Amino acid sequence: MSESASIDLTQAISARVKTEREARNWSLSELAERSGVSKAMISKIERGEASPTATVLGRLSGAFGLTLSTLLALAEQTGERLVRHADQALWQDPETGYTRRRISPPTGGVLELLEIELPAGVRVPYPSDAFVFQHQQIWVTQGVLTFREGSQAYRLEAGDCLQLGAPLECEFFNAGDEVCRYVVGLVRR
Image (tube, rainbow, N blue to C red; front, side):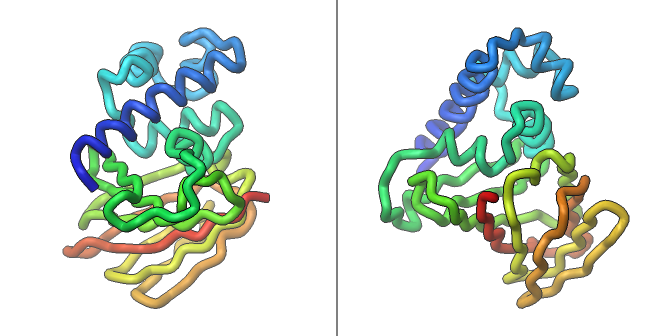
């Protein structure tokens, strides 16, 4: 994916956050209070001056009552049924280097496939409300992923697949020395 496509996705995310906030008639302060993200950071995101981290996007999407995946899918939506690998939306967390590639065509369908690359030593937490309206499975294709769901921890190796349970606070962690790659399959409830 080209750098300009990545910039376009960042701009689409910025616009979507603003659209969701305004659709609810919330002020920046109200979204900040509901999400736990500072008003200044939300303002920078909406103006396209800051690229939000995965954790920040998880908090914002939860405040909107959306999953992180839904928020990003709304930003990416085009209606095309075919998406070539070179054109798949790729987003990178500016803080951790975590990357999320949307494999599925951005049509807004009920099934969504994502490929995640989690760099060595990176830990990405999500609040439970980031998973509320979806069934989700994680299939590790490279490396080892430690996934914590509530108080339960799973060590997933290449080829392992885990179906998530009820929405709980969770954390994705790559304790290894190499990148961990996994595919997330989502179906909206």
